[in-house]
Image (cartoon, rainbow, N blue to C red; front, side, top):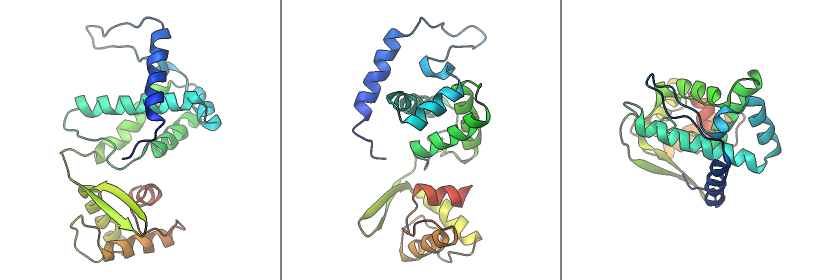
Length: 199
């Protein structure tokens, strides 16, 4: 996924924050460890930062991206726990958790989200494909496209092969599904469409 130009300054900000953070404990023999910086903040703090779109919100976003990268690196049988979900969708999912649990730690929301995402994770390395319609392009894993085609078939929108390719039949099926959900009819496997299709 293309990254915003905001990312370099985001990570610089996180580094600066870490320099000012109080000392953290290392992992204990029983495996307990401290969650750095934003992980111990309460959920209501994250919700406020997101509503204001403050600089701190982008620190949260960077923290989540780093946490998920670490999870992908060390979790067993996992290549990508978020094979199609973009950071704004993940932030919306976290907001949903945090609004229901304002006093919970932010890390609790992240871990609850991972539990929800894990069954549909990408377990093996997979190729990416481009889905194009007009001037718009979405890049997705081929296996995600296959999952989407299967879901569209089950719902009666698609009758083609489950091949993970983005052809005219798949584009037409996406448009029909989008129309049924009052979504923008892009014909592409964009974030709102995949969210509605997979949830």
